Length: 185
Ligand code: IMP
Ligand code: MG
Image 1 (cartoon, rainbow, N blue to C red):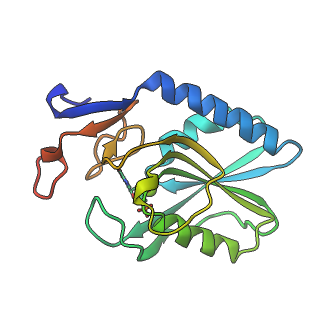
Image 2 (image 1 turned 60 degrees about the horizontal axis):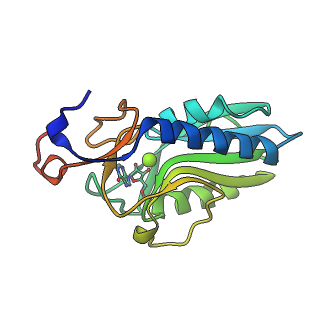
C-alpha cells in the first residue's frame, strides 16, 4: 500500500481510529435518539470515515454527499470554494450532520455551514475525524471530533496527497520530500 521509506511517522494506528469511531457513533446515536439524521459526507476525503461511522449509528439515517473544491495549491486551502456536486436531498427542516475528514484552516467548513444553513435545516452539526486547531483561520463549531492533531500534513484513512493514500487504514505523516511541490508520489 505504501513503501516504508515514505513514512515519517504513524500518527494514529488503525485500532485507535476504529475505537474512536465506535465512541463517536455511540455518542451520535444517543444525541439523535428518536430522530432521523441526514449525514452529509464531504467528498472525497470523508468517504472512508463516513462508511465506518455509519455502521455505529443506530438511529435511522440517510447518507448524501457534497463535493466542493477549493482553489489553491494541493496542500493548502484558499477559502474560495466552488460546488462540484450538490446534495441530492432536500435538507429543509431535517437534522443534518456534516461529516468531514479534517478541519484545517476552517475555511471550507465555514463556507459549507453558511451554505447549508441558508437551506433551513432543523439542526446542523459537524463531525470531523481530525482537527488541526493550530491552523485555524476562522472559528468554526465542531460538535464531534475524533482527534486533535499537530500541524503536520497527514494522509491515509480517506486523506490524500494528489489523490493517493486514501486506502491506507491508518493516519500517517509522509516524509516532506513526498508532498512538497514537484515531489514524487
Ligand atoms: P480547510 O479549508 O483548510 O479546513 O481544509 C479542509 C480540507 O483541506 C480538508 O477537507 C482536506 O481535503 C484538506 N486538508 C487539510 N489538511 C490536510 C492534511 O493534512 N492532509 C490531507 N488533506 C488535508
Ligand atoms: Mg476534504
